[in-house]
Image (cartoon, rainbow, N blue to C red):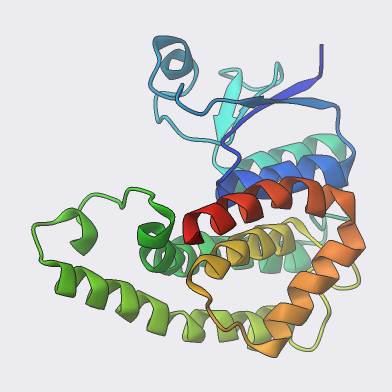
Length: 227
Protein backbone atom coordinates (compact mmCIF):
# COMPACT_ATOMS: atom_id res chain seq x y z
CA UNK A 1 0.00 0.00 0.00
CA UNK A 2 1.25 3.47 -0.88
CA UNK A 3 2.20 5.84 1.92
CA UNK A 4 -0.13 8.55 0.57
CA UNK A 5 -3.51 8.29 -1.13
CA UNK A 6 -4.52 11.30 -3.18
CA UNK A 7 -8.22 11.55 -4.04
CA UNK A 8 -8.58 13.65 -7.16
CA UNK A 9 -10.78 14.94 -9.97
CA UNK A 10 -8.74 14.87 -13.17
CA UNK A 11 -10.24 17.96 -14.91
CA UNK A 12 -9.46 20.27 -11.96
CA UNK A 13 -6.46 22.60 -11.83
CA UNK A 14 -6.69 22.68 -8.04
CA UNK A 15 -6.15 18.92 -8.16
CA UNK A 16 -3.53 19.32 -10.87
CA UNK A 17 -1.36 21.27 -8.42
CA UNK A 18 -1.01 18.34 -6.04
CA UNK A 19 -0.79 15.79 -8.84
CA UNK A 20 2.23 17.62 -10.27
CA UNK A 21 3.69 18.07 -6.80
CA UNK A 22 3.50 14.40 -5.81
CA UNK A 23 5.33 13.41 -8.98
CA UNK A 24 7.92 16.19 -8.82
CA UNK A 25 8.61 15.39 -5.16
CA UNK A 26 9.07 11.69 -5.90
CA UNK A 27 6.70 10.66 -3.10
CA UNK A 28 5.12 7.24 -2.75
CA UNK A 29 1.43 7.67 -3.53
CA UNK A 30 -1.60 6.23 -5.22
CA UNK A 31 -4.16 8.31 -7.02
CA UNK A 32 -7.88 7.66 -6.74
CA UNK A 33 -10.27 9.36 -9.14
CA UNK A 34 -13.37 10.20 -7.08
CA UNK A 35 -15.43 11.76 -9.87
CA UNK A 36 -19.09 11.45 -8.85
CA UNK A 37 -18.22 10.16 -5.37
CA UNK A 38 -17.62 13.30 -3.30
CA UNK A 39 -21.13 13.29 -1.81
CA UNK A 40 -21.17 9.62 -0.84
CA UNK A 41 -21.29 8.70 2.88
CA UNK A 42 -17.84 7.11 2.69
CA UNK A 43 -16.23 10.23 1.20
CA UNK A 44 -18.11 12.62 3.49
CA UNK A 45 -16.93 10.69 6.54
CA UNK A 46 -13.37 11.54 5.54
CA UNK A 47 -13.99 14.95 3.97
CA UNK A 48 -17.22 16.71 5.04
CA UNK A 49 -16.22 19.71 2.91
CA UNK A 50 -16.59 17.55 -0.24
CA UNK A 51 -13.34 19.01 -1.53
CA UNK A 52 -10.59 17.59 -3.69
CA UNK A 53 -7.72 17.06 -3.74
CA UNK A 54 -7.99 15.12 -0.51
CA UNK A 55 -4.96 13.43 1.00
CA UNK A 56 -5.26 10.32 3.14
CA UNK A 57 -2.14 9.78 5.22
CA UNK A 58 -1.69 8.08 8.63
CA UNK A 59 0.40 10.91 10.09
CA UNK A 60 -2.50 13.39 9.96
CA UNK A 61 -4.52 14.05 13.14
CA UNK A 62 -7.80 13.14 11.39
CA UNK A 63 -6.22 10.94 8.74
CA UNK A 64 -7.16 13.30 5.89
CA UNK A 65 -6.37 16.76 4.61
CA UNK A 66 -7.86 18.85 1.83
CA UNK A 67 -6.85 22.14 0.14
CA UNK A 68 -4.02 21.85 -2.39
CA UNK A 69 -1.67 24.38 -0.78
CA UNK A 70 -2.08 22.84 2.68
CA UNK A 71 -1.35 19.37 1.27
CA UNK A 72 1.83 20.54 -0.44
CA UNK A 73 3.01 22.49 2.61
CA UNK A 74 2.38 19.53 4.93
CA UNK A 75 4.21 17.02 2.79
CA UNK A 76 7.14 19.38 2.24
CA UNK A 77 7.41 19.91 5.99
CA UNK A 78 7.15 16.19 6.72
CA UNK A 79 9.69 15.06 4.14
CA UNK A 80 12.09 18.01 4.32
CA UNK A 81 11.50 19.08 0.72
CA UNK A 82 13.25 22.41 1.06
CA UNK A 83 13.95 22.62 -2.68
CA UNK A 84 10.18 22.95 -3.19
CA UNK A 85 9.35 24.87 0.01
CA UNK A 86 12.27 26.94 1.36
CA UNK A 87 13.17 26.72 5.03
CA UNK A 88 14.59 30.25 5.25
CA UNK A 89 11.76 32.33 6.77
CA UNK A 90 11.85 35.20 4.25
CA UNK A 91 11.94 32.93 1.20
CA UNK A 92 9.19 30.76 2.65
CA UNK A 93 7.07 33.84 3.32
CA UNK A 94 7.29 34.78 -0.36
CA UNK A 95 6.13 31.30 -1.40
CA UNK A 96 3.27 31.42 1.10
CA UNK A 97 2.26 34.90 0.00
CA UNK A 98 2.26 33.91 -3.67
CA UNK A 99 -0.01 30.94 -2.93
CA UNK A 100 -2.40 32.85 -0.66
CA UNK A 101 -2.64 35.70 -3.19
CA UNK A 102 -3.55 33.14 -5.80
CA UNK A 103 -6.30 31.42 -3.84
CA UNK A 104 -7.65 34.68 -2.41
CA UNK A 105 -7.44 37.01 -5.41
CA UNK A 106 -6.38 35.41 -8.69
CA UNK A 107 -8.24 32.10 -8.60
CA UNK A 108 -11.70 33.59 -7.90
CA UNK A 109 -11.28 35.67 -11.07
CA UNK A 110 -10.08 32.64 -13.02
CA UNK A 111 -13.12 30.70 -11.81
CA UNK A 112 -15.58 33.44 -12.80
CA UNK A 113 -13.91 33.82 -16.19
CA UNK A 114 -13.55 30.14 -17.10
CA UNK A 115 -16.13 28.04 -15.25
CA UNK A 116 -19.01 29.00 -17.59
CA UNK A 117 -16.96 27.82 -20.57
CA UNK A 118 -15.96 24.63 -18.76
CA UNK A 119 -19.46 23.78 -17.57
CA UNK A 120 -18.45 23.95 -13.90
CA UNK A 121 -20.96 25.26 -11.34
CA UNK A 122 -20.24 28.70 -9.95
CA UNK A 123 -20.03 29.46 -6.25
CA UNK A 124 -23.20 30.53 -4.41
CA UNK A 125 -23.75 34.28 -4.54
CA UNK A 126 -22.13 34.72 -7.96
CA UNK A 127 -24.06 36.41 -10.75
CA UNK A 128 -23.87 33.14 -12.67
CA UNK A 129 -25.95 31.39 -9.99
CA UNK A 130 -28.56 34.16 -9.80
CA UNK A 131 -31.70 34.96 -11.75
CA UNK A 132 -29.78 37.53 -13.80
CA UNK A 133 -30.31 37.35 -17.55
CA UNK A 134 -27.75 35.92 -19.95
CA UNK A 135 -26.43 39.36 -20.88
CA UNK A 136 -25.65 40.18 -17.25
CA UNK A 137 -23.98 36.81 -16.72
CA UNK A 138 -21.88 37.34 -19.84
CA UNK A 139 -20.88 40.80 -18.60
CA UNK A 140 -19.86 39.39 -15.22
CA UNK A 141 -17.72 36.79 -16.96
CA UNK A 142 -16.10 39.45 -19.14
CA UNK A 143 -15.50 41.74 -16.15
CA UNK A 144 -13.66 38.91 -14.40
CA UNK A 145 -11.62 38.21 -17.53
CA UNK A 146 -10.68 41.89 -17.84
CA UNK A 147 -9.65 41.99 -14.18
CA UNK A 148 -7.12 39.16 -14.54
CA UNK A 149 -4.35 41.35 -15.94
CA UNK A 150 -3.66 43.22 -12.70
CA UNK A 151 -3.09 40.28 -10.31
CA UNK A 152 -1.22 38.41 -13.04
CA UNK A 153 1.18 41.31 -13.40
CA UNK A 154 1.76 41.29 -9.66
CA UNK A 155 3.39 37.89 -10.11
CA UNK A 156 5.71 39.28 -12.78
CA UNK A 157 6.61 42.45 -10.91
CA UNK A 158 6.80 41.19 -7.34
CA UNK A 159 7.01 37.42 -6.94
CA UNK A 160 9.15 36.70 -10.00
CA UNK A 161 10.96 40.06 -10.32
CA UNK A 162 13.26 38.92 -13.12
CA UNK A 163 13.70 35.37 -11.79
CA UNK A 164 12.75 32.26 -13.74
CA UNK A 165 10.62 30.93 -10.88
CA UNK A 166 9.11 32.24 -7.66
CA UNK A 167 11.35 29.67 -5.98
CA UNK A 168 14.43 31.14 -7.67
CA UNK A 169 16.55 28.72 -9.68
CA UNK A 170 13.99 25.94 -9.42
CA UNK A 171 10.21 25.68 -9.07
CA UNK A 172 8.57 25.93 -5.66
CA UNK A 173 5.11 24.79 -4.64
CA UNK A 174 3.92 28.34 -5.40
CA UNK A 175 5.18 27.96 -8.97
CA UNK A 176 3.33 24.66 -9.29
CA UNK A 177 0.12 26.25 -8.00
CA UNK A 178 0.41 29.21 -10.38
CA UNK A 179 1.25 27.18 -13.50
CA UNK A 180 -1.59 24.74 -12.86
CA UNK A 181 -4.07 27.60 -12.45
CA UNK A 182 -3.02 29.24 -15.71
CA UNK A 183 -3.91 26.04 -17.60
CA UNK A 184 -7.63 26.90 -17.23
CA UNK A 185 -7.20 30.19 -19.09
CA UNK A 186 -6.82 28.17 -22.29
CA UNK A 187 -10.56 27.51 -22.01
CA UNK A 188 -11.33 31.11 -22.93
CA UNK A 189 -8.33 31.63 -25.22
CA UNK A 190 -7.00 34.24 -22.81
CA UNK A 191 -3.96 35.98 -24.25
CA UNK A 192 -1.35 35.45 -21.59
CA UNK A 193 1.52 37.95 -21.49
CA UNK A 194 4.83 36.72 -22.89
CA UNK A 195 6.37 36.28 -19.45
CA UNK A 196 3.53 33.96 -18.38
CA UNK A 197 3.87 31.81 -21.51
CA UNK A 198 7.62 31.60 -20.89
CA UNK A 199 6.98 30.72 -17.25
CA UNK A 200 4.61 27.88 -18.15
CA UNK A 201 7.03 26.52 -20.73
CA UNK A 202 9.87 26.67 -18.21
CA UNK A 203 7.77 24.82 -15.65
CA UNK A 204 6.93 22.01 -18.04
CA UNK A 205 10.45 21.67 -19.45
CA UNK A 206 11.95 21.65 -15.94
CA UNK A 207 9.51 19.19 -14.38
CA UNK A 208 9.06 17.03 -17.48
CA UNK A 209 6.57 14.17 -17.21
CA UNK A 210 5.77 15.16 -13.64
CA UNK A 211 4.02 18.16 -15.18
CA UNK A 212 3.03 16.92 -18.62
CA UNK A 213 1.35 13.68 -17.61
CA UNK A 214 -1.29 15.10 -15.23
CA UNK A 215 -1.60 18.32 -17.25
CA UNK A 216 -2.71 16.22 -20.20
CA UNK A 217 -5.92 15.37 -18.32
CA UNK A 218 -6.75 19.06 -17.80
CA UNK A 219 -5.80 19.96 -21.35
CA UNK A 220 -7.94 17.18 -22.74
CA UNK A 221 -10.91 18.33 -20.67
CA UNK A 222 -10.43 21.94 -21.77
CA UNK A 223 -10.21 20.92 -25.43
CA UNK A 224 -13.38 18.85 -25.08
CA UNK A 225 -15.23 21.70 -23.38
CA UNK A 226 -14.19 24.14 -26.10
CA UNK A 227 -15.21 21.67 -28.79
